[in-house]
Length: 476
View 1 (cartoon, one colour):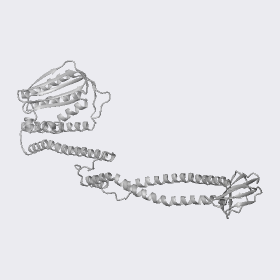
View 2: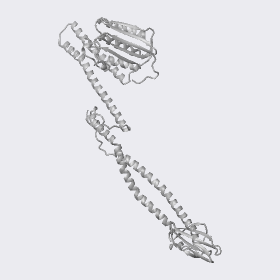
View 3: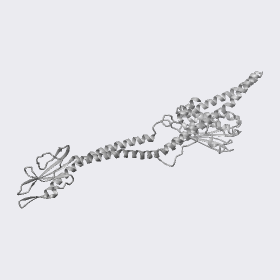
View 4: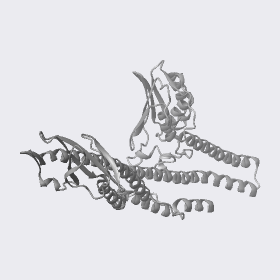
């Protein structure tokens, strides 16, 4: 008992070793996943954005230089340059050069100190004073004046610095977004797993109080967790039923064995204490033998029922002349029925064959017929019927005895169940295991059995089994 208690404490008590809860595990898992996804997405977007920014800077530079052609005009032998060319738009500096490379008009960034030869239509990248520049020249033919060049210069570094500000801002807000996501996710996870917490508390309470009658209370729902709780409650119900059945079984076995053991002990004491003749000793020994034999039969029946319920009882199907077998059993039972002046009548269809376990079929008929004899009335009749119906065989045992009450009828298949003791009619050999064994035999043969009874008028047991059994036997 001490070992069992320690095991129960280990299973039901709270685990002393603290572990990360499922809520935190899920939160960390999907937060980390979202963080990786966000970083990967941000890296892709920033890479694309960087390329787009540089392409936009190049396009803007070329556009401003080409528009600079509109600022130049050759009029009456003079070159006129619009003063708007001095304005710096979108970070583009424009200037005008003659064919010899001398600047005529315009502005140049003061950080740009490189001497760069003119080259029309070519975008060049240069570095001056640690700053990266784009330079683009465009040649313009002004008629009598000749060719002039419009040069545009813009800083790539400034554009990249703006991009770096965007990157820094993104990485500043990224942890904040991750934290907010983790907090919101934790709340959502906690809410989603709240039914699991209720299940844990319910199971903890059931385990600590060792009360299988309690159930896990859940709100209405049809998701996986609610279905799990419903299945768990069903399992608890089955366990409760099984434990109650075992308790009842233990109590019934104790009750059944107590009486013969008491009789045996009392008679043994009487034999030891009294000085009696051999005839008296023989009578006492016969009583002891009878009770010991009943005990042996009871133990054998208990073991058989137990093995049957655990699927440990082998069944051997073979083709059996069931009509002849039934007739033989009826003849044997007729001798027992004579003690109560009961007549066994039979209506058996000849030549019936079926795949059955012969040993269990004999036990089936013996249990049903002996049950009818035990609960039949003096000078009564027991009718045994057997006939074929298509691919099935139907059997019936009918008596005109005391019958079974409506209250007792649903319980007759339970182990050790016996109705009012008056039903035994003086029989003390009934153990209450015959009908449960009958039901198991019918189930093992893939059949069905029904009972009809009216108190004071008699009982009828009707069963049906297939003539041919399945190729693969089911589990019973």
